[in-house]
Length: 156
View 1: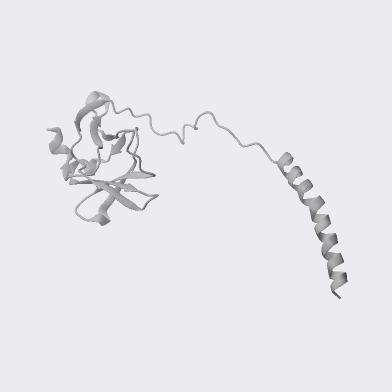
View 2: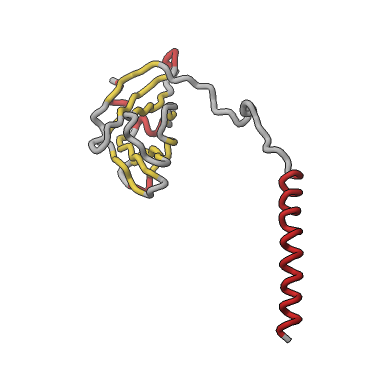
């Protein structure tokens, strides 16, 4: 009883020993190339709003980290604002997001990912006082919380 099973097993392994590498090679040769796009379509591209005019810059808002916050405005004084962040090169956090928090943590508004690109500030945030929270998604930890700030008062 064992000998026929061993013979069957030997034939199956020998067949797989030949068929699997051939199937793998055929799969590699037959796969389609990865599509590449030089630029995003206009519908998917981020808006071309340039926030260039600095209103103010502060480096004392985040007590635990050396993050600087810049309040930027669109050219021609259209009234739209953005928050720009910068940190020293040695400060590294994985998947860092910036939130605006009102009085309650349940009212957190995601402004966007921490990085060199300015994050547009919605008008309702400009009128309320609150704090900015730096949250690392990869570590699932709050990296830092700013001191309370009200953007409209800081502009005047």
